[in-house]
Image 1 (tube, helix red, strand yellow):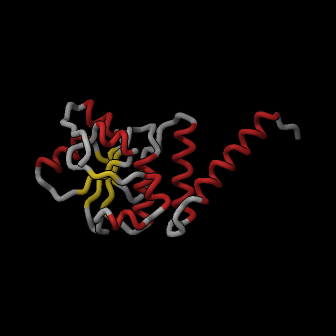
Image 2: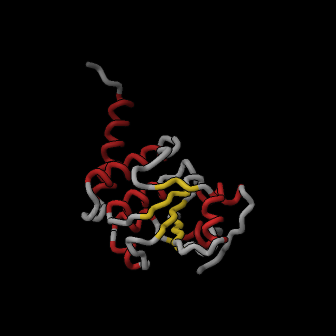
Image 3: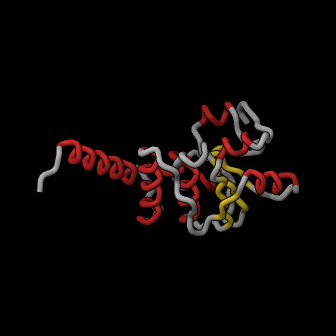
Length: 169
């Protein structure tokens, strides 16, 4: 069976990508969780949309999150983007829990004050961003129960005309 050089190189790059991601992960994450994280990273690499759903995680819309906030429901909103993006613009009241950091150290969720029964909303940069679905998968693995994914992310929030915050919190 003949394989082109580009096919062999692409396979090698994907293997190295996955091995690097798995090698840097906190050992608390299950192989299934790591597979889900790696699949999200590959979708991002290939410029494809993230999965339409994640088992055990509720998909919420910007309107759903706004209603929770307006009703003063006790929720924790996690911005999973890099610090530069978080400081530039974010959903008001959100706290930053970066996907890369959580991948390396699962204790960061507890260090951020998260409790397993908290109602948690995760978001990043929308349907093409791997960060929030990866964080949702990692938090699910760590035993968090009330997970919500704002799949449209900050772009969906802004598109609805909702207020954003900026600067260090």
